[in-house]
Image (cartoon, rainbow, N blue to C red; front, side, top):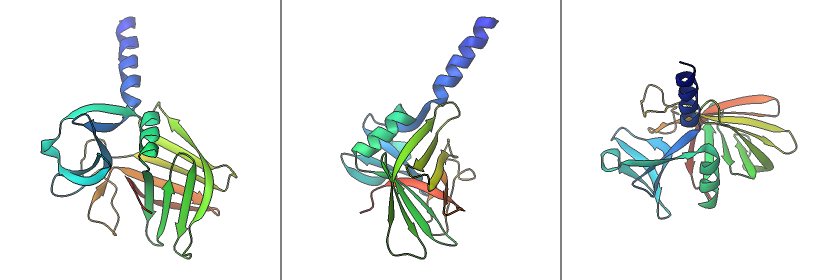
Length: 180
C-alpha cells in the first residue's frame, strides 16, 4: 500500500508539472479557442485557428520549457482587462504595461517564477518590486464554463491573470500572441 501511495504521488506530481499542449508534433496551443471548435496554434512561425478535430496531442511542455519556447518564438503572454482597459505583455525578461489613462507602455525588467506543484501558475514581478502578477490556467479541458472571457472578444481564453501596480489590483484574461 505504501508503494502505491508513493507511485500515485509521483504520477500526480509529474502530471501537474505539465502545462501546454503540443499537437501533431510541431503545433503549439496558444491558450485561445472559439465557438467553432477551433484552437489557436503556432506552426512554422504562423499563428492561426485550426479545427481541433484535425489535431492529435503528441506532447506537453512543462511550464519552464513552455516559457522558454514562447520567448524563443518572440511571443508574449498578453493579459488584458476592461473597466478600465489595461494590457500587459509578459516575456521572460520584461513586463510592458499599458493602462487606460496612458498612450505609452511602461516597461519593467521582470523575473518569472513557476509553480510546478499546483498546475500551471506563472508568477512574475518587476525587478524594482513595483509590479507583481500571476497568470494561471483555469480551463484545462477547453470547457467554456471554466474559460476566461472578456467583453472585447468572443473567444475563450484558458488563462486568467492578476497584476498589481501602483497599489491597485487588475484582473483579466491572458493569451499568447505577438503584438508589435
